[in-house]
Image (cartoon, rainbow, N blue to C red; front, side):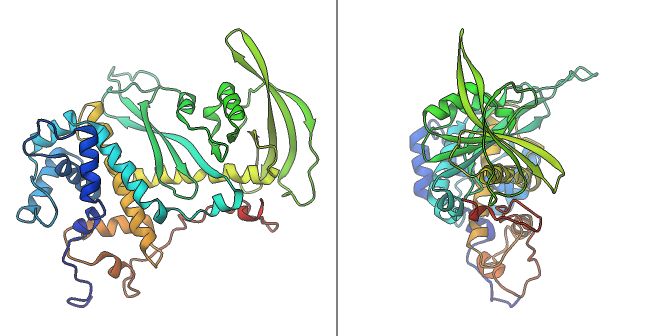
Length: 411
């Protein structure tokens, strides 16, 4: 690397936080009054400290406070007013409202949605496809109730469940809701906004016939898997045309009972049985999309795997094993800051002309966090040997045999 070829007046850390506008932070502070009664360690300082924690993958308050001492004398260029002590950061994590960090994340998503989205799925279907799922994060203490048996040593561990919704075209959460790990997934369905131009995709852990009836009444589509012990009656068997993928074994209209108090109503759904040659097993899907092709519905469920990749990406690259506080508020703040850093990295990755694996991009930024390297110039340079594409993108193809049908052509 030449002496001044990739030089920048800002460090890599400064370039990343420059994606967060001052106006955005001020709006979030004003909306949630997060700087009330605060003299020194303001919301912006708190936010940048937790972003530093996520980038460096700190496992304790001491590591965050010690690491940020290296920024002494550079506060002006990094828009920092105060470098926190350990106790200051602990108090802020406990007392400052998590709503401020949630608002910053939502404003970031609103600003950069045009960068993160490619709209291929929406253009192909004419509807917006949203994927719903949850991931459980184990806690070292029984702060939020977890599931499972009580350990032999009598010390219970806690668990927090993060329910997320992502647009199939964006691959970052646009709605996050936290609950204890013991809370059943289907309770989250009532928080989803119903829209006739939206299709929700989720696994069978969210099966709730009352919610499915509500979706149908609001003309909102959904695709999920049928439970093994589900009871239903078959009212119609549909013919499978020759242009449908050969993996589709059956296409049926079924009726299920929906219990509303003492009354019971009937709900018509579509059941599709599909054989996956790659995994050598059959799947049964249910949906209220009666006008879609059977193989398109199977492909829609395949897209659901994108949210699993997102959870894996976040847990592998950011600090969600060790938390900086033993209270619910501190845990939620840390998770939201991880989501903010994940979004910032997604924006950087999308802005690059060369393909970079997400994990390599995070590692590069972590190693060179305080070096004055122009991030996009260096990452786009053909001379560096960091480049490696792991195939994290482009999960739209469903079938892997000789009669391959690409999802975008199955509408």
